Amino acid sequence: MPSAEIITIGTEILLGEIVDTNTRYIARVLRGMGVNLFRTVTIGDNAERISQVIRDSLQRAEIVITTGGLGPTVDDPTREAVALAVGVETEFREDLWEQVVAVISRYGRKPSENQRRQAYVPKGALAITNPVGTAPCFIVETERNALISLPGVPNEMEYILHDSIVPYLQKRFDLHEIIKIKVLHCSGLGEGMIDEKIADLELLSNPTVGLAAHTGVVDIRIAAKANSESAADEMIAGIEEDIRERLGDVVFGADEDRLEDAALNAVASRGWTLTAIESGLDGMLARKVPHTVSLPDLDPASLMEALRTTHTESKTEVALGVIASVENRTADIALILPRGEKTHHITYGGPPRSVTRWAVNLALDWLRRRAMESD
Image (cartoon, rainbow, N blue to C red):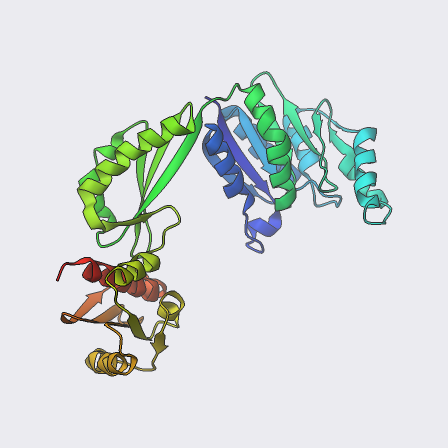
């Protein structure tokens, strides 16, 4: 099975001026093809540095994909960098220039002289048509490697990747396997405690199981490699069943499921209605839970009293109150259910900027769990 590396080119990405979405997109496509992605890197617009990164990647991986740096300006150095990396010159291709002219003419314009740069590719490269943009792409082949250079514009890159590159890779590397992933979302146990319960599964080679901790949520990633989607699904299903048996209601969803939806669905499943109040959360709870009132300067001593007032006025079965102190890194949660009232005071050991998200996630999980309990 071939391995791959992705090189994202652009000083604007390196300096944080724009967000790189191409790496994530390409990684998911490669994953679906069964290609092992071992490394990604972002490099600025410098031909020498780009060429060195490319040479390093070619030593490690069979497939190297670059994005960006194929525009018409002098700070678009990918063509020159790739040529330098493989020890050839760039050459002008008349057929590519005709493509550039044809695309620009669709907008009623004539190409400028500097746009001729886009018709240059490393000598001997396999040219790839770009029917949705002005930057032709190319593949430099060696006996072992495929070095693929794609545009940085996301919609152009995505189109060419699916239209030309995926079929090329399938044929060149005889790709028949797929990698499929399912992510289980957990709340109520920390990463360390979850690790203790499923540590033996994390040692498996296929499927693989891994953990990723977020603020108040832990993800369990199950990845299976197989010859068909149905075979991968079957492999994942067996591991998922085992994990759910071990963790119980700690698992609140999978893939695109959200904690707030799990909490609200648990309340709705009991036929209850819900209101909420928050303080010190900058509206974060209100963005997740309908009918949330933001109140200023609530303290732990006044939280339950304020929640009782809101509960009475709203005439709902359930009321949730959450306050957080970034300075003290603490949160207080109050909950009114048909079967009684509960309060919870918690402290946080993480960075202060994460206190509000942590408080909201723990409050939602607490609501979810209390709603799921039998009376």
